[in-house]
Amino acid sequence: MKRTICIFFCFLLCLISSAQDGLSLKTIVIDPGHGGKDPGAVSKDRKSYEKDFTLDISLRLAALIQEAWPEVKIIMTRTSDTFPELEQRARIANDADADLFISIHINSTTGTAANGYSVHVLGQSSNKNRDLYASNMEICRRENSVILLEDDYSEKYQGFDPSDPASYIFMQLMQNSNLEKSIHFAELADSALHGGPISNARGVSQNPFLVLWMTSMPSVLVELGFISNSSDLAVLRNIQHRKEIAARLFSAIKAYRDGSEAASPEALPQIPETPEVNQVNQVTEVNQVTEAPEVRYGVQLLASSRSIDENDGCFSGLTVRRYKSGTLYKYVTALSTNPEDAQNALNEIRNSFPGAFVVKVSGMTDISPYRKTL
Image (spheres, one colour):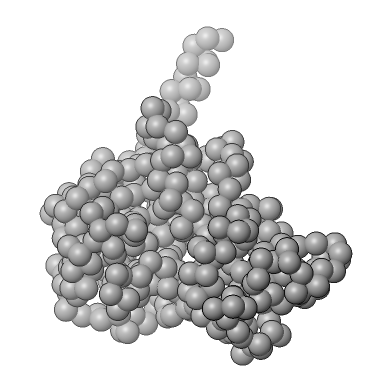
C-alpha cells in the first residue's frame, strides 16, 4: 500500500515538474494602467501623464509578442485613451481565460528623490518584518483609488474603500492559487529589467492591489520608474528607452514561457524601429467607453437618510449640491468637468470632512467655487 502511494505521488511530482518546464501561453492580457479621464500620475511640469507612457510601452510589448508568437492571442484592456474600470480590466482577463495578466504602471511620490522600477504580486508584504499596511501602502492607495471615479463603486467592489486600511484585511485573507506562478513571473520581470534604462531595482513585493485580487490567473503589476523623478522621467520620455523597456518585459515573458529560472540578456529581441504603436493591427481591445456629456466630478461630503438644507452650517461654508440616490440624500461640492480639480479640492476638504471622497455624478450642470467666500 505504501509503495502504491509513493508511486502515485512520484507520478504527480513528475506531472508538476513537466508542467513547469514550459508553460502554455495561449492568451496574454496586457493592461495599460489608467487612461481617459484618469491620467494617473502626472509629472511635476504637468506635461507628461502616466496613462500615455503605460499605453505606449504596452502597445510595443504587444507588438513584440505578436511578432514572435503569432499563435498567441493578445488582449489589451485598452488600445487608446479610454477608461476601463478596474472591475472591467479584471473581467476582460477572466472572461478570456487568460494565462497571464500584466498591468503596467508608472510610479510617483510627492517628493523627487524616489526612483526605480518595482514588480508587485497580490498578497501580504513579502518581508515578514514589514507591516502590510506600511509597506507600499501609498502606492496601493493611489492605484486603487481610481475606483472612486466609477459609478456605484461601493456596491461593485463589495464596500471596498481605498482610503481605509481596514478594507485591505479581506485581501490578506484571500488564497491565491496562482501566487507561486505570479511570483515566478515577477522575479523574471525584475531580472529582465535589471541593467536597463531605469537603473534602480526596488525589488519584488506582495501588495494588495485591487486589480490583481480580482483576476483568476498569474498576475503582476509593474511600476516602471517614477514620473516624479527627473532621471526616470527623462528615460520615459525617450522613445528608444521605452522600446527597450518593452523588449525587456518581452524577454521575461519568453523566459516564463520557456520554463526558465531567469530572464537572459540574450533573450532581448532587437529593438525595432517599427512597428510603431499605431501599427499594431491584431491586438484585441475589449472596451469602448463613452462619456455622457453632462458628467461631473465632485467631492461627496456625506450621505444621510434625511434631507439637510444646502445652506446648513454643518457644511462649513462650502457650496453644496444635494441629490437623491435611492433612499439617501447625498451632498457634493467642488463640482468640475475635470476629475483632477475634484481630487485637488479633496485634499483641503478632508481637513473638515475626513471621510470625503471623489465621486462621479451626472445631471448637475452648475459648476461654481466650492468656497462660498473666497
